[in-house]
Amino acid sequence: MNRAQRQSGFTLIEIMLVLVIMGLVAAYVVVNAFGTNPSDKLKTEAQRFHAIATMASDFAVLNQLQFGLVIDDQRKSYHFVTLDDTDNWVPVEQNKAFTERELDSNYAVKLQLDGFEWESEDSLFTDNALFDETLSVSSDGVQIGNEEDIPPPPPQILFLSSGDVTEFTLTFEFADPQLGDDTFSVSSQGYLPLLHDLTISNSVVDNIANKERP
Image (cartoon, rainbow, N blue to C red; front, side, top):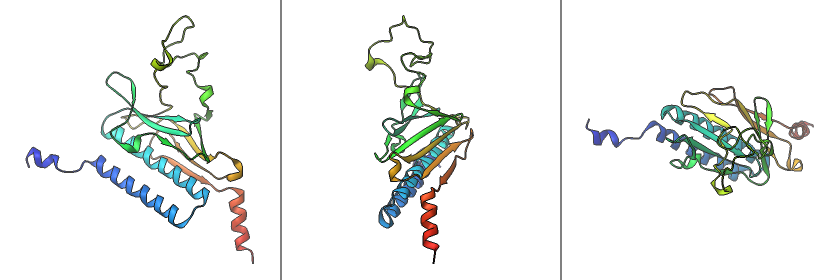
């Protein structure tokens, strides 16, 4: 088999990407065609993250890359980054699945690292923090330049080429408790597979109980 023939096939990553996209499209069609329950849509959003995060970890291992996940709880969005040849975190642009995903305004995400809740305002990279944006020890007498020259914050979650994953729990929930109290969590114990758990709220349990009453 010559070189041209070998290059004409599909790579494992391309096949995986197609399968993930097909699964997401199927889930989207089912949710939109057969139900508009906000809880179902919240669950679908969490399932999407589970699939994409799993694919990101596999992608990092197969291509020997260092991947990271940046979660912005203020903008209700997340996107993947990769470490380039100059040791800078840059957005992943070769696959649209890894680009920024902004959640519906009705949803919110809550990140926990090592059991502690992460909030943007509690970042280690604020003005009075121990570290600056380049992970160097900060100094009040050091001028780091204009605001637009400051690099973006590093990722909170790492997907390493070794297969190691930062231990985390990311919970998808409603921004307004009046919309519902269902939550759906995706977590890592430091490696694949990622765990997921759908917590059924008391309101859902009550609805099921009411339907079963004579």
